[in-house]
Image (cartoon, rainbow, N blue to C red; front, side, top):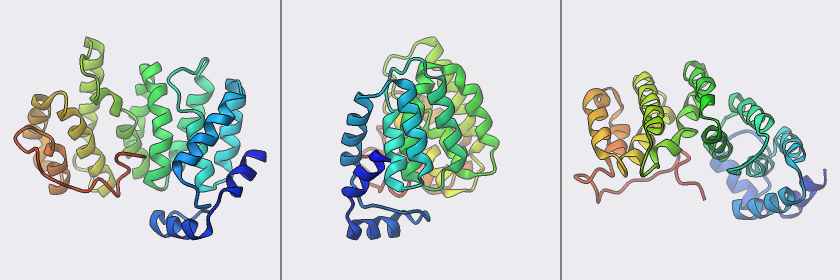
Length: 239
């Protein structure tokens, strides 16, 4: 595949070894930086229609190369894809294969655009909360982060925000670190625009969270601002 050859030509064995040690997921790493992957994906995307982009994304993902999977996600990270059913189906099909935060978060950056375009897909995402794989449960929260960022939400946006807050309630007793981290991340982001709602949620459910997730959730509340903390590992704040 020409696109894979382009990626491989940019590889750095030294960086690849560092990435393999850092990410730990058992796959091949090339040592290509994310901004370089992004530039390549943009150039490929420019010459393809939607079916072509979906097909290329599928083939890149199926190669199981770390950088190729990120490139697959980048190909589909657009606000407007019409029609987008095939793109959403492909992204949703990737979710059960997640085995690390980096690829998962790039894929869900593509997924969140498709959720914003068709919010009724939240019905499908809600089923992920009961999946035995914690990366799938986590993806339900990461993919819905855009509803924490709306500065002037409409009534339907508030309904969807409340729906996801009910998902946090459902997952609050989940002891998996990455799920707890995602709950804290979701609440922290919401606190930038609706601190009162985050205070209310924490008052009702915060005691069920692990202490680090509770601290993360409240870190940007006005009364707590000024604290420091590391966002990684956990997939927060992708480059």
